[in-house]
Amino acid sequence: MNLMEEHAREFMGLPKEWTAYGWECYPTAGRKETTAYLVTGACFQGKTTEGKPDIRIAEVEGTVATVALPKAVHKRWLADRETRTGKCSGCDGSGREVALWSSSTGTTYRPCSDCGGTGKPKAKK
Ligand SMILES: [Zn+2]
Image (cartoon, rainbow, N blue to C red; front, side, top):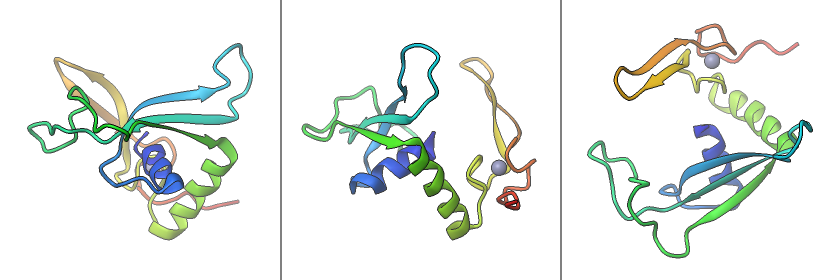
């Protein structure tokens, strides 16, 4: 999800403070195959105690944007990014992915299903 935010920022030349808070697959209706992702975000006025943008506080006027990323474009961007950074795009190089999140126990992780926990891009066939 964070990589979609990064791609949306890059795609539209948005500032690095721009934070995504909505993700949608297009088309949404029926069982049609996804052809694009709609990423919605804004710059926010407040920060959380961890210093991250606080999406519960009002956004900066005029910064709300919905970016449509065609699926094929996003896939190519991910592949390019793996080449550029040497990091798996499934986990951004951390080797793990979120398995479960709950407000009482926090986040539980498991090894990334794309790279098997190595954090490196899978060898291309
Ligand atoms: Zn990975």
